[in-house]
Length: 143
Image 1: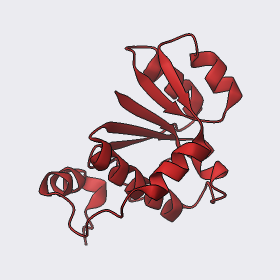
Image 2 (image 1 turned 180 degrees about the vertical axis):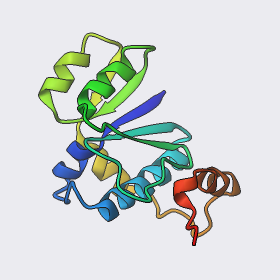
Image 3 (image 1 turned 180 degrees about the horizontal axis):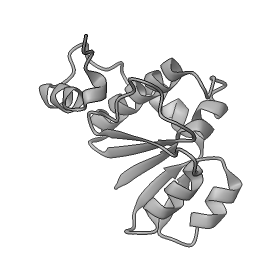
Image 4 (image 1 turned 90 degrees about the vertical axis):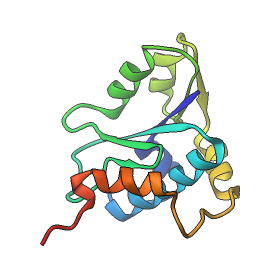
C-alpha cells in the first residue's frame, strides 16, 4: 500500500505556511520518518513551481510539484491506476473525485497526529536513503 499526500492541504491543516520551502522540507523529513517506520512508499504533491534546490526524493518519499496544473489533478490521475492507495487530504472536491476508486481518504489531522507520535528519526539516515538523496542533482551543492 502506498500513500499519496496532498502536501499543501496537509500543511494548511497543520497551521504551517504552505509557501515556505523550509516548511515543505520539514514535512518531507517527517514523511521520510513515517515511510521508514511503516515500511511504505509516499508521494507528496505540492501546488505550484518547484523551489530552487529542492530535492525530489528522500528515502521512500517522492516529491512532485504541479507547476501550472493543480496538484489535485495530478493526485487524481495517480490514483486512477491501481488500487489500495491511501490519500491524505481534507479537500472535499478531491475526495469526491477519487472516492469511487479503491482509495482510502485519510484525514490530515489524524495523519499529522500519527506523524508527530512516531519516534524521532535516527540521526543517521540509512545509507540507501542518502544514496537516493544525493543521486538527485538538486540535492548537491555545486560551487
